[in-house]
Amino acid sequence: MRALWVLSIAAFAQDGAALYRQSCAVAYCHGADGTAGRAPALAGIALSPLRLAGVIRSGIPDKGMPKFEGTLNEDAIYAITQYIKSLPAVAGPSTAAVARRPLTAPEKEGRAVFFDATRMGSCGACHEADDWGSPVVKIETVPADPAALRAFRSTRIKTYKSGSESFPGLAVSDGVVYDLSSPLPVRRRLKATSTPAEWRHDLSRYSDTELSAALRFLRAVQK
Ligand code: HEC
Image (tube, rainbow, N blue to C red; front, side):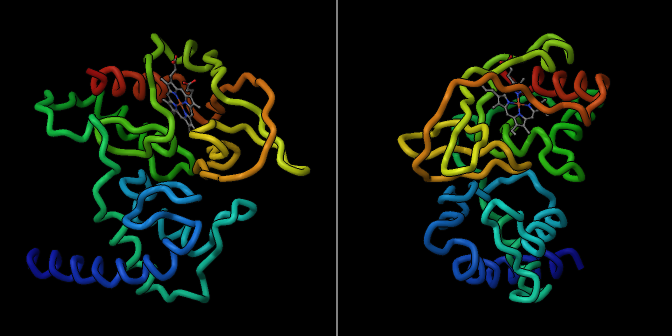
């Protein structure tokens, strides 16, 4: 039974690969094999297949992610989510097999908060930890408590202006910026001017208990 299930998922992932190349990895959108194109990298993205399917169906208005409802049927959308989920996360030093101690129950609670798929724009949408999530913004230090995290101001984020548009962004390289105004950071290549800005997390949807748990998890997985 299980073997059959695994086989059918693998078959779906294979169809998904073809569909992905046609629909998602075109020209300037998500890169081949789930790496970042103009849009965010999808390999290892911290969205459950269900959430991912939702984004594919409805798109992200204003951010250039088109909606595929009506263009792709439910089987195709399912196949694409299975394919994306089957991709290995973008390799980085932390993806090397490291023998780690298993997480304790409270640390696992923190992991669940960090990657909570029911929140659009959970921590894992911007940060990678424990080999999961999206490595857009590297976490250098883990603050002592929720208050310190809420008070944290990043000076690496600047305000970018392009035409009449203005958004907080993180420069990746010359002319390439992650737009942090959407719940999933969007990689954009654009001509823009930037001015210094102080950026803070929007953590209003998180309680102190949840943030404590997330920080506990981060402390456990940062070597
Ligand atoms: C929209 C993207 C985004 C989301 C979502 C996000 N962060 Fe961040 N985070 C950032 C950016 C940008 C920085 C600043 C990086 C820098 O300045 O080097 C940062 C920095 C941090 C730091 C380092 C702070 C320090 O003192 O150096 C921690 C810890 C952190 N985030 C934890 C979290 C947690 C926990 C969540 C979820 C509750 C979260 N982040 C959600 C973008 C995000």
